Image (cartoon, rainbow, N blue to C red):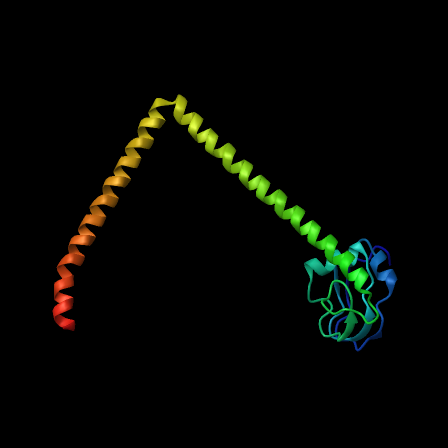
Length: 163
C-alpha cells in the first residue's frame, strides 16, 4: 500500500474525515477525492500539498472540508495561527519576487554590457549598428512627414463636411 501511485476515490459517497495516513504515501502521484461527503480538516503533509498543486480539483464537491490548501477556514482556528501562516507566505512571496527581480536586473545589465563591449571592440558591428539606426530614423521621418501631409490635406475637407 505504501507504494501506491494513483488513487481515485471520486464520486463514491464517502463521508467522514480524510485519514492522516494518506499524507504518508510518498509514491502517490495522483489523488482524486472529489464529489464525496468528506468533512473536517485536510491533513497537512508535503505529499498532499504537492498533489494539490498539480491537481487543484482533487477536493472539489466536498463542502465539509476546510483548512489548507482550501480557502475555507476550519472552525476554532486562532487568529494567531492565521497571522503566522500569512506572515510566512508573505515573506516567501517577497523572497521569491526579490530573487526574480534581482536575476532579471543582473541579466539585463550583463546582456547590455556584452552588446556594448562587443560594439566597442568590433568596428564592423559598430558600423552596422549605426547604419541600421540611420535607416530606421530615415524611414520613421519619411513616414511622419507623409502622414502629416495626408492629414493636412484631409483636414480642410473634413471641416467643410462638418460645417
